[in-house]
Length: 395
Image 1: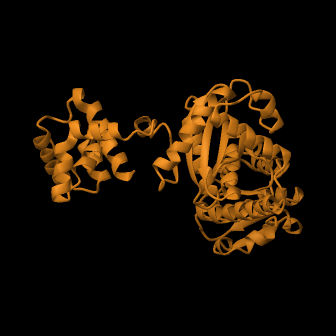
Image 2: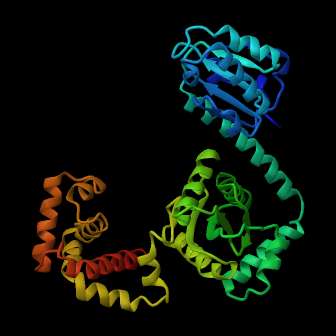
Image 3: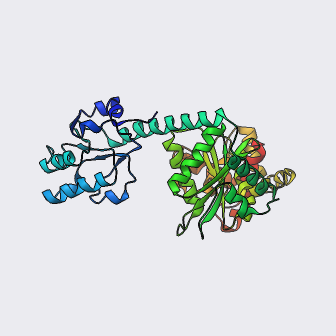
């Protein structure tokens, strides 16, 4: 069921803020679509409607009564559900013109007389909103067969992965996927029960404000997210959008991997395959990307592990033998050191070691190998070998 403002005010996190409704009392049964905090004076055009707006009034500091009335009129025109003003930081008491204008606009206006961090309020409220919305969606999905659009999306994604795509643009439209001109496309793979995985991709698309194509293929949910024009790092944008979607869904355990960017639908097969492979390479990771795991993917692409054994043996075998005999962790230490740009400080922090302990390990590594591992000429071969060893051990 939708969350109303009256119901939200009964939440413990709001009651802790000692709320007092001073305007719009008759409108408390309005639905709260989202809870948002902002101190921007000109916030009205940035609102979509249905929000409960939290503010300390900082954006109103130094403004006159007319400007404050304009602020209330503008956010009321944007269709917000209500406004909550925390007293004490900017205003010890509510300015009369704010309360008067809220009454004129029939806008619920709430004073928060006790300090509760806005992040706590937004997290509790928005998690509740998303959770119950997704419960309803899940019931709808489970309760009936997939729609024709869903079937077309799954078939299209399957053909992309298999490299057998035909009439891609027409079929994408049939599946409801209409990316804009110039938008880059990024493949995504998700592992979880279907409603939860679909919800993550749908919310990531909402964050990006772009279309999404998604459906079940085999035991996974695959998807394609369009990235707005002008975004330089398309993969990074999708990675951030998925992370935000996971956060909004209350730390969901949906595991997601992001592929690389493509400019046309027909080039997405490799992106989807890499995203799918990245999921299997890091089964404990909640969010990863083929870009981060590029070396892992290349070393395992053909399924032949014999070359991994040869690479390890000829490059770092002394370290492997030492680790085996002494139950130490020199190979992993070296890999982390190389991945962190040969920075002793960052490596020690990543391994939870003191700097002196790390330097002792590094000295042992270089003694066993017989050369300096920071030499640029050996960096690539050592990184390949340490990655190959990790992949071989976890296979």
